[in-house]
Image 1 (cartoon, rainbow, N blue to C red):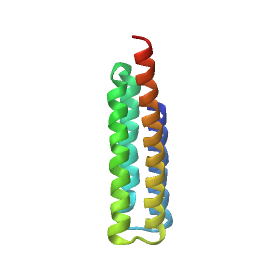
Image 2: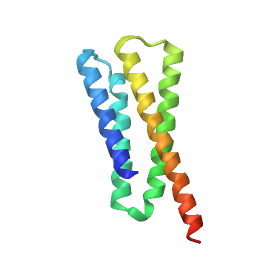
Image 3: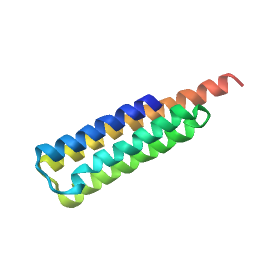
Image 4: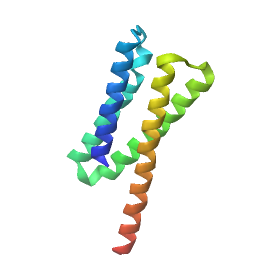
Length: 118
């Protein structure tokens, strides 16, 4: 999962930077996916560096994905975004939702494997 967290981080950074450049946005809010991506990379790297704490880092990444989903959806509903902002928020929501589903599946599989080994 830590490699997936790093991959998601890279994708979110690319999303934030590309949307900011293409939309010619002068607002720092267009870089929010990139900021979230940096945290995903940090959590993934932490899991790689400290394998005994990986489950904590990945639970943090799953929580971050939930926060990103709720933040993006809240902004979509609250402001009714259009154009590149809409695209960025939808992609952030989709990417983080896919990560969260994958994380939950991984957590379930790890719990089942742990119970079988006891």
